[in-house]
Image (tube, rainbow, N blue to C red):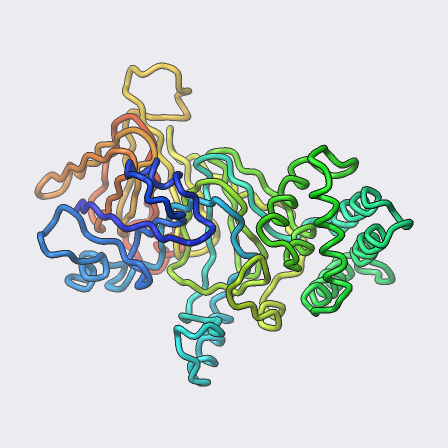
Length: 439
């Protein structure tokens, strides 16, 4: 079945006021619209559209016939989203599967209500996630080399007046904290230094406030570039200071990679990877969990002790996730997890000029041994299931979404761009009869 789905954007304070309305073709409400959820997560399940006069959700649809509409007779293990990031999100990590199960069980045993502010684990699942930029996206993602953070703090200290000023001395002290000394193993030394920096930044000590104020004064003091600081890093710091002045997460951000994604580029966020999205619009797919441990840049609950237990303090070599190219016009991001993968199909008319042959196709065939959730992000797309007993057709314009039940392959034609989420290939390895899910 090809079933239209829709949802109401979620109004979080960090959302953009116009990006999602522009994509969906709806008038702005004046409120920030942050996320569009397209799946069966109980926090905001998508509604089935154009099917019945009685409103019901994708959860209801799957429950009505789990073998037909679910994944192995159960709920969807993934959730597709569109994010419209108008302000920085919280600095955060997600647990792995074992950590999530243990944390959830412990909080259940302690009798902490699911809606309690101090609750860390709302479900027993892990939450790896993959984000693909629709426009330019900025994000903090994973720890960079400690020496790079040290050099930035030294440059900020120099801009603050060096050892001749209190601000310069405070920032120079941060640089010293990012200097790994006295250990033969540089990897272990760097991880230890990050742990110490983390513990200090969230200790509540007066020196933390002094360092945070010194950094804020430097980056706000001039609109001009600062010698020794990358212009994009400086802009990110100015944005964080403007949104979260005095938050220790601003100091911690200097330890992280600053990633600027062009449209079509992606990052994958595995368990324990510290990150924060800063700006832009993107498609995101994740395991269907909502477990988030926050480290700052937020007014929500922060549990530093639990986050410190979960966070991966190792250096991340490359934040970006590279897509495969299984067919002309098709890109596929497939991290090594079974819960999800994400595909992008770019479509053109057979005679349409201007696009390289490998960048778009006039026809894409997608196998569907498991359900698919898709959204058109540009132009129009025609989705067909010609091999079904009763041929099925759906015409999507930009901003419309579709739920495709497991079954025969679907064909995509038209002019535009479509993103499709489904389970990962590792899931197919759990006894599925179809070994190849894309051709």
